[in-house]
Image (cartoon, one colour):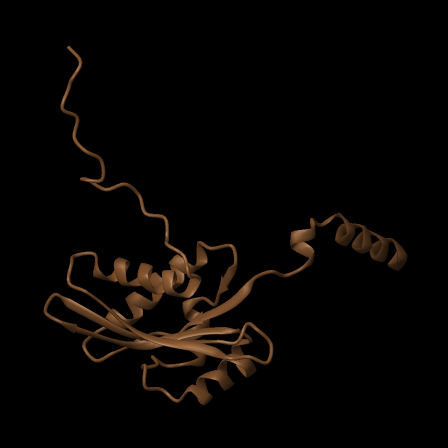
Length: 170
Protein backbone atom coordinates (compact mmCIF):
# COMPACT_ATOMS: atom_id res chain seq x y z
CA UNK A 1 0.00 0.00 0.00
CA UNK A 2 2.80 2.41 0.91
CA UNK A 3 4.64 1.57 -2.30
CA UNK A 4 1.55 2.29 -4.39
CA UNK A 5 1.00 5.67 -2.73
CA UNK A 6 4.69 6.55 -3.18
CA UNK A 7 4.56 5.52 -6.84
CA UNK A 8 1.47 7.65 -7.44
CA UNK A 9 3.15 10.62 -5.77
CA UNK A 10 6.24 10.26 -7.94
CA UNK A 11 4.15 9.93 -11.11
CA UNK A 12 2.03 12.95 -10.19
CA UNK A 13 5.15 15.06 -9.59
CA UNK A 14 6.61 13.94 -12.91
CA UNK A 15 3.39 14.90 -14.70
CA UNK A 16 3.50 18.50 -13.47
CA UNK A 17 4.45 21.07 -16.09
CA UNK A 18 7.94 22.58 -15.81
CA UNK A 19 6.50 25.92 -14.70
CA UNK A 20 4.81 24.28 -11.71
CA UNK A 21 7.94 22.37 -10.69
CA UNK A 22 10.16 25.39 -10.33
CA UNK A 23 8.86 28.35 -8.43
CA UNK A 24 9.28 31.52 -10.48
CA UNK A 25 7.09 33.67 -8.25
CA UNK A 26 8.30 36.58 -6.19
CA UNK A 27 6.65 36.79 -2.78
CA UNK A 28 5.40 40.26 -1.83
CA UNK A 29 3.85 41.77 1.26
CA UNK A 30 1.98 45.07 1.10
CA UNK A 31 1.74 46.37 4.65
CA UNK A 32 -1.29 48.48 5.51
CA UNK A 33 -0.30 52.06 4.87
CA UNK A 34 -0.45 54.40 7.85
CA UNK A 35 -3.14 57.08 7.59
CA UNK A 36 -3.96 59.54 10.35
CA UNK A 37 -7.45 60.33 9.10
CA UNK A 38 -9.51 57.19 8.61
CA UNK A 39 -9.07 53.91 6.78
CA UNK A 40 -7.80 55.25 3.46
CA UNK A 41 -4.41 53.57 4.06
CA UNK A 42 -6.03 50.13 4.30
CA UNK A 43 -8.07 50.78 1.17
CA UNK A 44 -5.05 51.90 -0.83
CA UNK A 45 -3.07 48.87 0.41
CA UNK A 46 -5.86 46.56 -0.75
CA UNK A 47 -5.86 48.24 -4.17
CA UNK A 48 -2.10 47.72 -4.51
CA UNK A 49 -2.47 44.06 -3.43
CA UNK A 50 -5.17 43.43 -6.02
CA UNK A 51 -3.19 45.05 -8.83
CA UNK A 52 -0.04 43.12 -7.95
CA UNK A 53 -1.94 39.85 -7.72
CA UNK A 54 -2.92 40.23 -11.39
CA UNK A 55 0.72 39.65 -12.31
CA UNK A 56 1.64 35.96 -12.48
CA UNK A 57 5.17 36.84 -11.40
CA UNK A 58 4.01 37.93 -7.93
CA UNK A 59 2.46 36.01 -5.06
CA UNK A 60 0.97 38.58 -2.69
CA UNK A 61 0.37 37.94 0.99
CA UNK A 62 -3.32 38.50 1.77
CA UNK A 63 -4.52 41.36 3.96
CA UNK A 64 -5.63 39.19 6.91
CA UNK A 65 -2.23 37.52 7.23
CA UNK A 66 -0.48 40.87 6.90
CA UNK A 67 -2.68 42.42 9.59
CA UNK A 68 -2.00 39.47 11.91
CA UNK A 69 1.73 40.19 11.79
CA UNK A 70 1.95 43.98 11.52
CA UNK A 71 0.07 47.17 12.27
CA UNK A 72 -0.19 49.93 9.64
CA UNK A 73 3.39 50.82 8.81
CA UNK A 74 4.40 54.38 7.95
CA UNK A 75 7.11 55.44 5.52
CA UNK A 76 9.35 56.47 8.43
CA UNK A 77 9.35 52.97 9.94
CA UNK A 78 12.66 51.33 10.83
CA UNK A 79 13.72 49.31 7.75
CA UNK A 80 15.63 46.79 9.88
CA UNK A 81 12.42 45.83 11.73
CA UNK A 82 10.54 45.50 8.46
CA UNK A 83 13.30 43.35 6.93
CA UNK A 84 13.30 41.15 10.03
CA UNK A 85 9.52 40.72 9.79
CA UNK A 86 9.76 39.98 6.06
CA UNK A 87 12.49 37.37 6.42
CA UNK A 88 11.58 35.72 9.72
CA UNK A 89 7.78 35.67 9.81
CA UNK A 90 6.33 36.37 6.38
CA UNK A 91 9.07 34.77 4.22
CA UNK A 92 8.81 37.34 1.43
CA UNK A 93 11.41 39.15 -0.64
CA UNK A 94 9.58 42.40 -1.44
CA UNK A 95 7.87 44.64 1.11
CA UNK A 96 5.82 47.77 0.41
CA UNK A 97 4.84 50.19 3.17
CA UNK A 98 4.15 53.89 3.57
CA UNK A 99 2.05 56.79 4.75
CA UNK A 100 -1.11 58.23 3.20
CA UNK A 101 -2.48 61.70 3.83
CA UNK A 102 -5.79 63.08 2.61
CA UNK A 103 -6.35 66.84 2.45
CA UNK A 104 -9.61 67.69 0.75
CA UNK A 105 -9.49 66.01 -2.66
CA UNK A 106 -5.70 65.63 -2.67
CA UNK A 107 -4.45 62.17 -1.73
CA UNK A 108 -0.70 61.84 -1.17
CA UNK A 109 1.09 58.56 -0.54
CA UNK A 110 4.72 58.31 0.54
CA UNK A 111 5.58 54.75 -0.46
CA UNK A 112 8.73 52.82 0.39
CA UNK A 113 9.81 49.46 -1.01
CA UNK A 114 12.40 46.98 0.22
CA UNK A 115 13.49 44.41 -2.34
CA UNK A 116 15.97 41.62 -1.78
CA UNK A 117 14.99 39.22 -4.55
CA UNK A 118 18.62 39.10 -5.70
CA UNK A 119 20.50 37.04 -3.08
CA UNK A 120 23.06 39.05 -1.15
CA UNK A 121 21.90 42.34 -2.63
CA UNK A 122 19.22 44.50 -1.09
CA UNK A 123 17.64 47.41 -2.92
CA UNK A 124 14.75 49.74 -2.33
CA UNK A 125 13.12 52.98 -3.23
CA UNK A 126 10.97 55.70 -1.73
CA UNK A 127 8.62 57.83 -3.79
CA UNK A 128 5.70 60.19 -3.31
CA UNK A 129 2.56 59.63 -5.38
CA UNK A 130 -0.39 62.01 -5.36
CA UNK A 131 -3.64 62.58 -7.16
CA UNK A 132 -6.71 64.76 -6.71
CA UNK A 133 -9.18 63.08 -9.07
CA UNK A 134 -12.15 60.89 -8.15
CA UNK A 135 -10.07 57.81 -9.00
CA UNK A 136 -7.10 58.75 -6.83
CA UNK A 137 -6.86 55.37 -5.08
CA UNK A 138 -6.82 53.38 -8.33
CA UNK A 139 -4.39 55.73 -10.06
CA UNK A 140 -1.95 55.77 -7.14
CA UNK A 141 -2.13 51.97 -6.87
CA UNK A 142 -1.39 51.69 -10.60
CA UNK A 143 1.59 54.05 -10.27
CA UNK A 144 3.02 52.01 -7.37
CA UNK A 145 2.69 48.74 -9.32
CA UNK A 146 4.25 50.34 -12.42
CA UNK A 147 7.17 51.52 -10.30
CA UNK A 148 7.63 48.04 -8.82
CA UNK A 149 7.33 46.14 -12.11
CA UNK A 150 9.17 48.68 -14.22
CA UNK A 151 6.53 48.60 -16.94
CA UNK A 152 3.26 50.31 -17.76
CA UNK A 153 0.03 48.66 -16.65
CA UNK A 154 -2.64 47.85 -19.19
CA UNK A 155 -5.34 50.45 -19.21
CA UNK A 156 -8.76 50.03 -20.82
CA UNK A 157 -9.82 52.57 -23.43
CA UNK A 158 -11.41 55.70 -22.05
CA UNK A 159 -13.68 58.31 -23.54
CA UNK A 160 -11.58 60.66 -25.66
CA UNK A 161 -8.88 58.11 -26.53
CA UNK A 162 -10.15 57.83 -30.10
CA UNK A 163 -11.03 60.72 -32.35
CA UNK A 164 -14.70 61.14 -33.08
CA UNK A 165 -15.81 60.17 -36.56
CA UNK A 166 -16.43 63.06 -38.94
CA UNK A 167 -18.12 61.10 -41.74
CA UNK A 168 -21.12 58.95 -41.07
CA UNK A 169 -22.60 56.37 -43.45
CA UNK A 170 -25.96 57.31 -45.03
